Length: 215
Image (cartoon, rainbow, N blue to C red):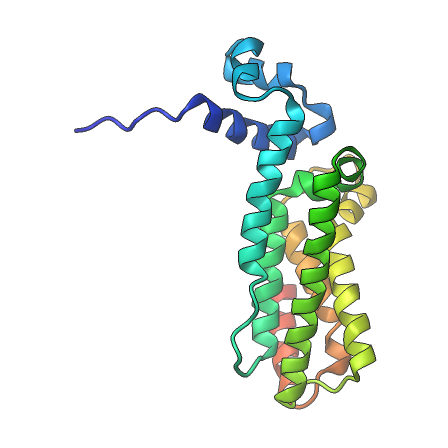
C-alpha cells in the first residue's frame, strides 16, 4: 500500500489555526499557541507566515471563496419555501465552519481593511440573493410582499445570520456553543418570511417548522 503523503507544514498551520480560532476565539490565540499545538518551533511557523494576520487572511480568503459559491445567482426557476430553508441552512453551516470570523468580526474589521471591504461585499451579495429568492417566491404566488417589504426582509434575514452567533454567546457566555445553535438561527431567519407566505407555502412552512421544533 502506498503511504499517504504528509500534509505540508503550511497546510497544517492553516488547519490547526482554524481549529484553535474556532475553539478559543482568534484574539485569544497567538502564533506561539499555534506552534506549541503543532509541536514546531516559532521560527518554522514564521517561515511560512510572517504573522498571525497572514494566517487569518488565508482563512478569510477560503471562507470568501466558499461563501461566493453559495451566493451564486440562483437559477431562473420556480422558488419555494423549501429552497429558502435549504439555502439558509447552508449559509448557517458555513458560518459555523468559520465561526471565529463571525464571533470576532468587529475586531477583525478594525484590523484589516481587506476583510472590512470584502465582508461588506459579502453582506451586500447576501441581501441581493435573499431579495432574489423572495421575489422568486412572489412571482410563484407563494409570497405577498411589496418591494419595500422584500428589501427590509432581506436585510433583516442577513442581520440575523450575521449576528446570531454573537447573540448566542451573549445569551449564555459560559455555555459552549454547538452546531444546534446554527439550526436555531436558520429557523429564526426563515421565520421572518412566514408572515408573508400565502396558500400552500404557508402550510409547507408550518410543516417544516413543526419538524424542526420536534427535533
